[in-house]
Length: 250
Image 1 (cartoon, rainbow, N blue to C red):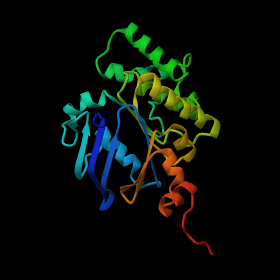
Image 2 (image 1 turned 90 degrees about the vertical axis):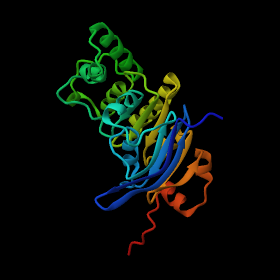
Image 3 (image 1 turned 60 degrees about the horizontal axis):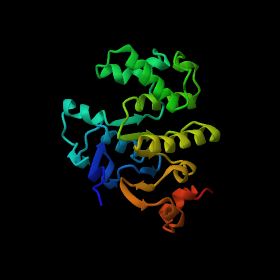
Image 4 (image 1 turned 180 degrees about the vertical axis):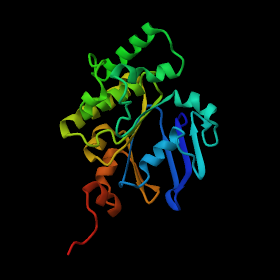
């Protein structure tokens, strides 16, 4: 078997004296969609930010394509980030730029100056997320689902090896959420991309996951297929999957 695309070992992070990650161990295979579940505030988004160099761990190791990422300088991170696209929870679009300029931003940042090349790549990316014809709109005039699609077009403008999704269906109604889930699956197939999806949406989990991991108390508590998650009888897993708080209300 080939080695995992991403290998995380003993990843630890502390924020303001609070231990957020307490030794995360996780392998992510090339081409798979991993769904990372966990409680709100439990460290899922913090974990993603380590994979793209937005946070530096207190300790531990992250290997990407066999290369150690922890300890890289900002200059050394640049070629790595070109292979990793990220969809932030709120889309993180630039409100002062229209859709076209938002999607074109990564190309221009990396030195692309040919207008024809930029127009072609932006059109291709918007078409892939079903947002063709909206390139002159401003973010304020887009719905929540449209904003996420535009942000995703920006993430794939230079086809990445990995796409990180931070709560891609948060704040969306069930129909729009379903369209985003289908888009995640489509991009995995069309781009042969590895996807890491942070969510607490169980509908999304079962729809898109090849593998599921549950982050609990700063560590990976469960790891397996969606089918094994459904069948798991562990009380911690069942409480999360079934949405039980374990609290008694008098």
